[in-house]
Length: 173
Image (cartoon, rainbow, N blue to C red; front, side, top):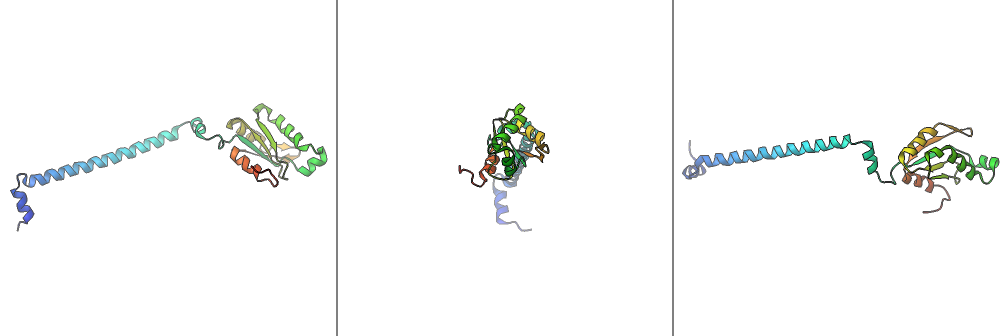
């Protein structure tokens, strides 16, 4: 078998073939170290995801910006403006606001807004926290109010503003 020029040069060098072996061993160790680093990084990511999943709901809710937290309760199907005007008179919206305010007084609402611009019978109740809004929605959903079945949903302030801004003739923000 014929030796190549590179083989002859390596044989003549002080390190000989051993130099080549040491380089190969060093490279093999570097590859193993990189693989171990990648495995450790994947493990760290997996642990971080598991830790994130274990956080309590209170931690997650605390991270939600106030305008995205469900701090409002939207009631649908509460009234028919034409029927209310015929029964109560021109001050029917104030009467509904007062009735709804009394129903949810224990939950300490910040504001009660009656959507008197449309015939959808919507009332928006704003609360200081998400728990009160959700409790209101759970308590009023499916309940009878003046012969009508109420549909109640906990919504964010941003969603509530969009609902009220979509009213025909509503003042522009």
